[in-house]
Length: 627
Ligand code: ADP
Ligand code: MG
Ligand code: ZN
Figure 1: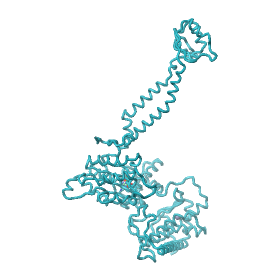
Figure 2: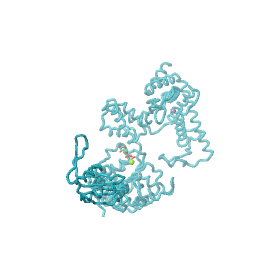
Figure 3: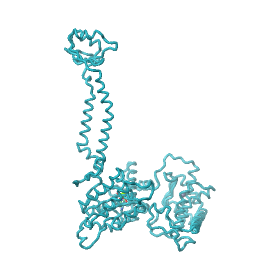
Figure 4: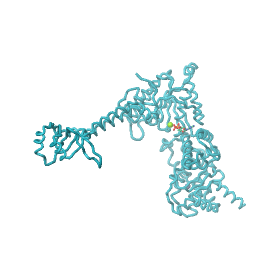
């Protein structure tokens, strides 16, 4: 019943639609028909004056007339001429004219006397036209509905194809992606290699007593290459890849989702060994009976169907089901029960070395200037995902193109990174001189403290160019990837965050709203130090708020471990103490380096952006001078 022809991937659809004559021949014919009907017959006739008509009758030159209401049309015995433009005459035998509104009582007698054949038509003829005109909108609507349905069907699972298994309800493809296209993610690749060898030779593995997980869940931040990894598994194994995205299930009517799941599994089994990949499964597999918005029938049906398909798998079916999610914390626990998605692979954000490899992949098709240092870029993009890096290089290429350069230079990359990290520059935003000065001092405060304290990351850049997310910024990047952070580092970081506020207070004797974000971030960091890392005096040996390792968004909100009210109060006191100390340390540095602070602020006001090296140099010369 099912035909398992190669289903074109959605990206090929538009071309296919044009190439397939069935999609446009019928609408075209309809159009031609309509135009034909709309051309009135009287376009073929020449309109003449009533006087001229009377003259023709009197000259016995009229063969026949047709009278319809006040319209008179007819044929001449020998052609008449009519002057259209100067020096241009047309000949005609078919004519039409109109009876004057005051009538012409003699006309009938005249016609009879000249033996003209008189036809009459009922005046109701125009009703035909009214009919067509009033049906036109209906026709148009029908046409639109028809076109829409066709589009739905070609996208998969249209309203008329519910339950028809061959409708394109998912994407089936042969994949070329391999593990070489995925940089880093070594842990995940290692685990998935096992799956690849199983898919290549299922019998062999089984004979050796090997068991392969039916369901694999890839979990990790967005853009870390989960989808890419799943495709790479299919590519490496050379098996068909049946994929669908969680949100696809939800766009159709109730019941369709469950059917799609059934068809997906059926078809994949027929082509086994194969891979089923359900991307972004959180869209359908949220914790049931909980969450915002209450129950969602369609989602629950789809999820139930999915679970029962997973359970109904025979061990010899040679189909591996993979799924990916950014939000493992909100998934229904039923999903990860043994025999379902019981193998979880966490895909981490890339490390510095991984980032360099990813950059290497995406510069292959780009021309880079000699000044581009990918190592430095990898170091300067902590927290970037693979997708972010790709996006950054793309932005850089666009910027280079905008400046009419074919080669991407370092400054394009710098600009692109700032854009990705801090949002677009806000052109046309005018700050007053005083605001600008305040921002300059605020950022200088961060930068001076950052450059002066021994354990903090080097300052990379200070900027007071207003962007969508902040009025200014001080960037610091670590010299190398760090996996363990010492308390000294944390304390210095807190002080750097306080540096902005300190400078404001010291120089202007007031506080601004610009420090809001600094204070929030600092408070969060200080809380983690007290609650999790035992870095406060009071809780040296205890983690009052033990958190699970995966700090994916969501669940942690409002669900920290129960602590007594007294402990909670003590935690708050410790957090405050850490922040106060950080503030005082920052203030000390700034008082001490007031000279550098003033100078940097001045430079910033003038140039808006200062490289971190300049700040470091400035402080170094100052120390040697004062020695
Ligand atoms: P996810 O599914 O985890 O959100 P994707 O697999 O869709 O992320 O990744 C988006 C894009 O980012 C990929 O198509 C790829 O171009 C790029 N990318 C992400 N991670 C990597 C990586 N480790 N190696 C190479 N490219 C990557
Ligand atoms: Mg994805
Ligand atoms: Zn700040």
